[in-house]
Length: 422
Image 1 (cartoon, rainbow, N blue to C red):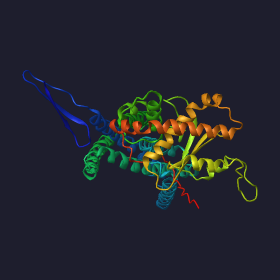
Image 2 (tube, one colour; image 1 turned 180 degrees about the horizontal axis):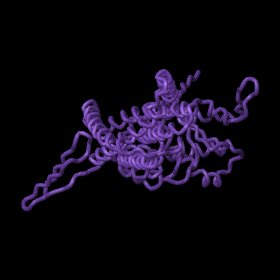
Image 3 (cartoon, one colour; image 1 turned 30 degrees about the vertical axis):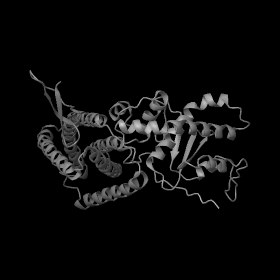
Image 4 (cartoon, rainbow, N blue to C red; image 1 turned 45 degrees about the vertical axis):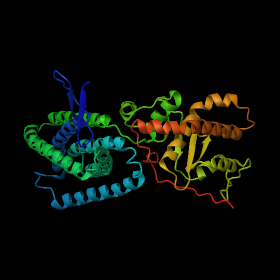
């Protein structure tokens, strides 16, 4: 029987495969997934460097380089305005979307390149505009570059941590920076030749569009090649719906082939179907309370005539969350209790997914007297179904390579509740 020995690189990819047998030659080819990402990353950095030189030339033309009537003071003030706009955008963007950058690192990594390439296009448009609109255009370009910096920096940190299989994050970042520096230097040298030879508007725009197309295509391919091992909202939809439907457990590589790069935030899908509803996890209790009845115009208090909230607390006494479905706006509200673990958050998402999937069939079978009783019954049935299969589900997910100890479902700053019973 031949002996197979696989050599694994520092980023987890298989670098070589040795087959030892009693006679004859053996050979094998390793998984080139990690090497593919390196090649694609090098190509996109090379194209981006050349495109950056073309946009820089356009900006210099716009501020008056080569024009004797241009004012150095005006150029400095424009630079100050661009820097100020960029820093303000950085603060606001990090405050608004900071929580979602790690769970959605693949999406924001590609979005960063879209922001950067759009900024290059705006820079190349600036020389054709009058002075006033040109200043606004360059300021907006600076804002886009600031968004690119936040999205790229945060997502790169998450992706680097994913590839650092041996805990060598510092070494991995150093090597990646060195590789990027070499590729950028080669791109600048090649770009210097290109810029000196390409001067007409038609040739410039044709080359710019070609380079940016290559840049985005390479980045899209690189992001698609990455298989994350944490379950964000979209991957949780794919994995959990498949398991709850037929008991099959998908691996991270299988899920990466199905997931979208850009997905609606909080949408619930059953095995890639059209959106069934929306889920809000980690939000305030007010989300559930406001759906139980109209609020008072003066005090803002909601009158829960059917004591639904009390029934929910009793129903989820052994769980680390509360869950409610609002049929009016088709939203599943998931309120997390204090010190909720990551697996309980995933269970809450699985219950919400099961609830909206079985909603049409269960509604016909339930003889509830009013809508709230019907929803309560739906919540109870879905909780029972998921609880019976949850231990099996988590065991198979771990065996398939999923990391269930990292909470990646919240994409906004959340709240927690603490029940004080007297």
